[in-house]
Image (cartoon, rainbow, N blue to C red; front, top):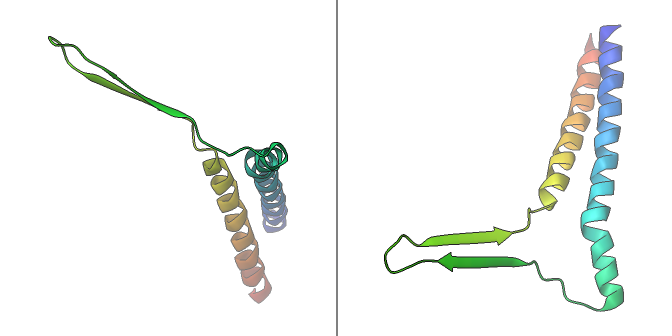
Length: 97
């Protein structure tokens, strides 16, 4: 009974992580690419570097850029792969007993 509950929970988790992967990929990558294609603009990631220094003090360098949003897609995709592998190996082990 516990194995079937765990199996159902893993299947639900895998389906949700797959849906999150598709939604985040479409929101982060495909939708902006579609809008840029429609408006015929080039995609350039904004970033800046600032150097502040003086003759009598230390020099500071500031680097600013956006958070790489594709990491979120990779995390959800890894959750999906782990869930699928869990389902495969769980079904394989439960069928032999």
